[in-house]
Image (tube, rainbow, N blue to C red):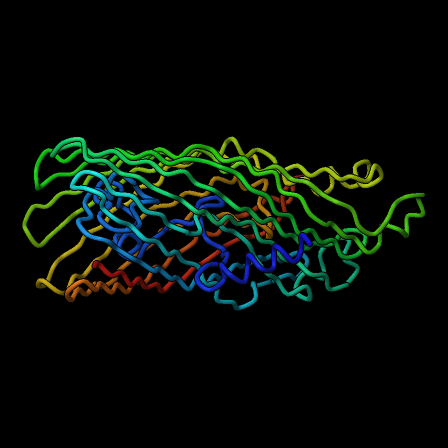
Length: 413
């Protein structure tokens, strides 16, 4: 029954949403094409549906009902090299769709309500086991190496304009998390876990003039206790009574606190310049433990399949612009610096983390109530070496590069 429920949920959400390998720990860096193509420097502007993610106070700028759909096609390429063993591996070529959809309605000149369903977090990889067969303990065998950690949020939202200068907004985030891992153990090891959690987002926007807007956003931590089936084909071969090939596993994972501040400047009527600073408390995500309902599994495997992360807090710096060619067409661009939260000593090919320099650009078109946005992101990773002396990570050279074309369609009525 549990698997059936999960399958139905994925089928429904899969029309617009799924999970992907992206950056900044487990977070996706972008929701909304306009925001993404302005380098994600959107907290101080937040003037479309994606304000639910960036700064819900910005929704008070909506003057009519709005329906929006956003889609992104993420194409990552992760590499892992360990020359001493002749390993030069690249992830399988895959396109991961992601996205959002939402509806918003002003109830008065000051009050706006609505919702957004979107993917705020996702990370994962899929490798060719033949490329990794020379790793210690593999004995030349090809195993499945695959990971996915992701979350879908349903976020009802309210925003209120206190006066001409100050607006506030808030969302309740009902989150559904998934953790799937496939890796070598005693034979092939596999786990599929799901769970739920609740968090909130609070936003403030101050507009002292038409030329300047300032935004602040705070996201609460979200703890998800994910439970599901774990299998390992070789476990019964140990010959212990009651040690079966499967068990129920539980992991607790916390998406940490996030805080951001941004400004939007309009030096001229057709030009907007934005800048953000965004802080994530990744230090809270020190380890991802697992426990089992089988005593032998707990005794023998709980430590072996614990993820030792030892991540550090990160600060992203983001910059963007929008230039209006005319009343219908806008061009946009941006840049952001996204440091890795992971020390080199804990790097793993299942949750690869590197520092990115990201470049974005796009165009927007408006006609009547219709808005169409097209964009592209390129994240250039910086290769990192996990030292041969590491006991927690996978020694070798790790890197990730990502391309992500995206689009959005919204309609005001």
